[in-house]
Amino acid sequence: MKKIAALLLALLLVFSLCSAFSEEWEFDRGVTIVCPWGLNGGADSTIRPMSELLTEYLGVPVEVRNETGESGVVGASYAYAQPADGYTFLLGTQSLYIQDLLGKMDFDFKDEFECEVILVHSINLLAGSRQQMEKYGVGSFSDLRAYVAAHPGEVSVGMQSAVGVDGLCFEIATEGLALNRVAYDSGDDVNRDLAEGLVDLAVGGYDDMSEQI
Image (cartoon, rainbow, N blue to C red; front, side, top):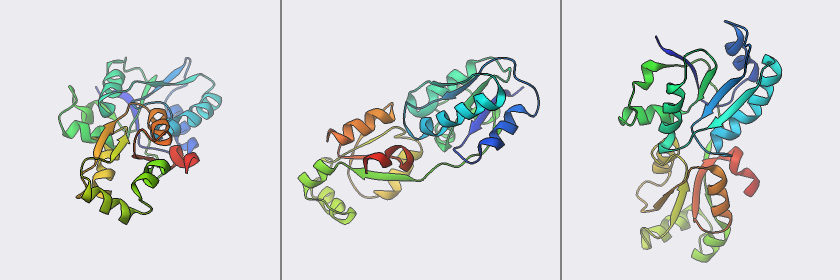
């Protein structure tokens, strides 16, 4: 029997999610949504406002639990280990399918989880630290390409899902550039280090990075 868990791919309509949660039974205790990525990253920033609305709609607490590591594998494994009773849901992105295809899961992700609701999240972006870009004399993406070509491996880029969707978007946007990847467990850490110039570039969702731009 498949585990009753929701694979949520990002943000579309709150009430479509409410309907999916409540159409088969009434909840009589709290619901947990497992976010397999860190605080204030794109996935976490998507689900937390929704959890507050779900709490009001369902009449029971809806908790977001962050279980981070291995580009989502740790969180998916945690959700898989919970009872299949309809009270634990998993927030996911295409990154989890990528980890499954790479053989990183110790269970069959596609068979053990059911997709309940498909949601939509904002676009990814590649942001640069102002202080570092000024230091390198970089004012555009063309400048960045030229600088990296002349200094391979010097420029660092931080991201949460280095082998997930963030990493794939990064690979497409920076094809041919020798950049130094730095893996993070939380969006807060990425944004802090970017603002402080400890990492030169960062990949993330517009929603969680826009306040710094």
